[in-house]
Structure formats: C-alpha cells, structure tokens
Length: 356
Image (cartoon, rainbow, N blue to C red; front, side):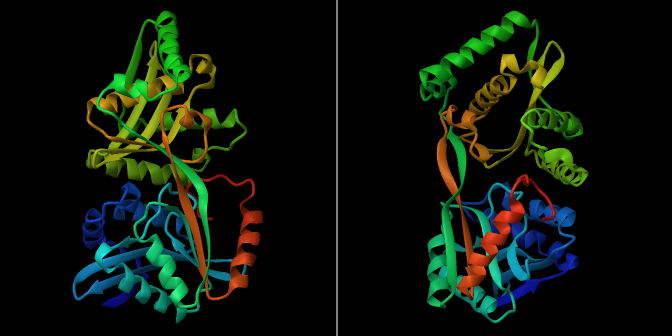
C-alpha cells in the first residue's frame, strides 16, 4: 500500500471520481462525505488552512481518504478534517476490509511528521473504524483523549405510514400536532406545503436568521461566505435531485422552512427557520409534520434532525446517538493544553461553517 498526500487544488479536483466511488462503497457515508461537500467547504473556508488530504492506495485502487487540512493555532500544528465545526457528521473514508493496515500506515506517517495533534470532532459513534483507530494509535504509543458524548444527534426511523408514526409519539406530542393543524385551519383559508428550488433559498436564510435572533443567537447565515457556500452546494444538490427545500405557506405568507439533503432514501436536515410573528401557530412544528408525512409517502426511511440538543427533537419520536471527539498526539500535555485553550477560544462562538 502507498500513502500519498494531496496538497494542491489541482490534485483535489483530480481525485473527485475516485473519491465518490470509494464513498459509495461505504455503508456509513452521509452527504457530508461527498467530494462536492468537502471541496466546496474547503474552497470557501480554507483560506487559513493548508490542504493535507491523506490517501492510501493499493496500486491504482483507492482504499482510504483522510480528508484533512492543517490548522495552525495556539502554537500547535493541528491536523483535522475539512468541515470541522461546521458539518454535522464527519468521517474518514476507509475500506472496511483493510482498517488495521490502513490506520497503521496513517499513524506511522503522522509520527514521522511535524504535526502536533490530530483533532477529529463530530465522528458518529457508530463509525465502523473507531475501535481500530484507537487500537492502532495506542499500539504506536500515541496519546489520545476521546469524548464519547461530545454532541447528541437525533434521527427518526420512519415507519411505513403516518398513523404508525403518530403511534410512536407521546400523547401530548400527538395531540399537539392535531391541535395546531386544526388551529391553523380555522385561522387561515390556505395552508400549503411547498417544495422550493435553490433559487428560493434566500427566503430560508431570512427565516432562519429571524428564528435565531429572537433567541439572541447570531444565526448560521449571518455570514455572506456561509450563504455563498450553501448556495453553491444547493445548486449542485438540485442537479443531483438531492435538494429538499420545503416551506410552509399560510394565506400566501411563507412562515417556516427546512433545508435538507436526501441520498439513498435518507434525509439529512441542514437548517430550519420560521417567522416569529407566527410563532403562536407553531409553524416549525407544523412544517415538520407535513415534511415527515411527505417523506413517509416517498419511502424515505431515515429522517435526521442534525446534531445538537434541542428540546423539540426529543418530542418527535427520535433516536438519540452521539458524535464523538478524538484528539491524538505524540505528547499527552499537548492534548490537555489544546483542550484548555480551545475551550476558551470557542466560548460564545456559533457552531456553523466558518474559517475558524
């Protein structure tokens, strides 16, 4: 097996076909493991980071991609995945048959380079390579710090009918859905669930920002760079029939929205928004209900509500999993110092795509 490191835009572009072919072979991939998400993310937010994509091949056969960049911070040279602190689910792409050999090669490369830390945030706890990753690092006398409950994530295994979905909810949640649907039916002559296009995305940004600002949160889309990134990704997703941008309209007023991506009969929501002027009607909850009902009709079997602990997610019949964080270093004190400095630096900052 041969290890190679991609450091240039040209080589990043050249690997696109092989990248997506490897991704498609893995049962744990999400839309965030596509070449397109990673390339666009790096293109918009990689200004202060050095590209460091580690690949492992057996002759011409691509077996692994570690989609990393190098970030220099606090005096440390940090190796971390593209999309860190702005992507719900981050993974390395690795052939399951060769986990042990590939990870041993990777860590040997790490040991022989001047990189201080590997920082891997938001790795799904279900990732098949996690145990091997830890075993290989320890065998090579590396130090690690693993937070197994770094961030909660919520998803719904959708049943085959709307009635069956209602049965998995608490009585209160079920009654709330029925009550607010009736309430809106009395107050509004026209209630529409609308599938939007990428050209409609500015309305989603507006609703998201409004719904966050009333909670004293700056919101994901305060930055034009973030909007430019999502605009480009939405256009790509639309061409692949993956984009799901849905709206709730009450008497021709758009009052709530969900931006999501679908792949392999799975939905991954990126962000939501609603108009606070209509909050007494629970527009976000109503839209979620219509959206889940539509997904069930279209045989979507997995509905992901993204990372983060929000009370409404628990009420929706979700399953709770965790993303983990693993930090690996050649020196133990590097890890403790980095965690301390990083905690202070990130305090009060939003979790959203950015260059930090």
